[in-house]
Image 1 (tube, rainbow, N blue to C red):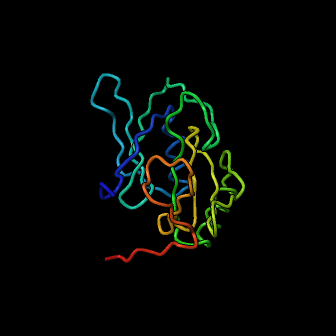
Image 2: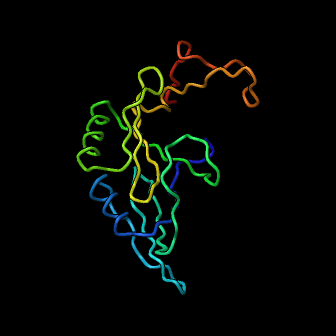
Image 3: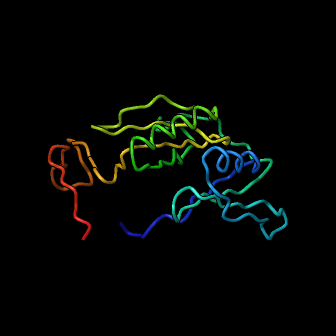
Length: 170
């Protein structure tokens, strides 16, 4: 990878209280930073943890017209950002998150979907319509690139699930 990690994803919101309530109270995140921008509008800028060393940086513009919710990975015009995916360590954690999200009544919680051999995911949205995904196991541990007869970016045959071998940590 070209960088060590992702530090933050910056997102525009129109209701910081709803955003903080969702990420803190439903997902269990922490507010890592909360201040007003040092400029004439004095907009709120909050950083909320989403993974070790990674935060969402939310900017509140109370008059922002946010796009309506659209399910992930479906083509649409005017949307460059699709969704953010979180991994969990085990299927037990995956199921616990599903139960937690169901109990909290989060918006747009999808059924559990099979994403490949022994890989499952579900999608939901935050109060601002940002699509989030939880997947297990971590797909980076078993990267699969499907065969594409018209490939433009991979000069040799794609690896298949049956051929995959984990890389050593060294």
